[in-house]
Amino acid sequence: MKLVKIMGSVTSTIKDDTLKGFKLLMVQTVGTDLDHAGEYFIAADTIGLGEGELALIVTGSTAKHTETTRGKNIDAAIVAKVDKVNLEK
Image 1 (tube, rainbow, N blue to C red):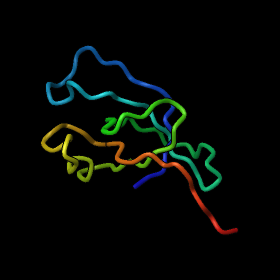
Image 2: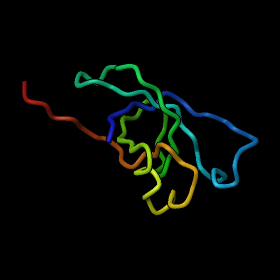
Image 3: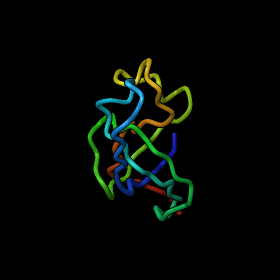
């Protein structure tokens, strides 16, 4: 899993039928300081999050194992909202 911040949404009017009904979000990985670390992904939102929220995503074939993404052409899926991160310093 990757810790990400939701940066915005992606609109696609012409797409594969297996992507219809999914909200696509632009996400960026964050480091332990919860600041942007650089890598961007387009992820299918399976739980209903919005811009600015922290989330966990799964990528690759693992992204196709949720109830809503099984059998779909999904390479990254948002699978959890992150409410808090506790780190010992």
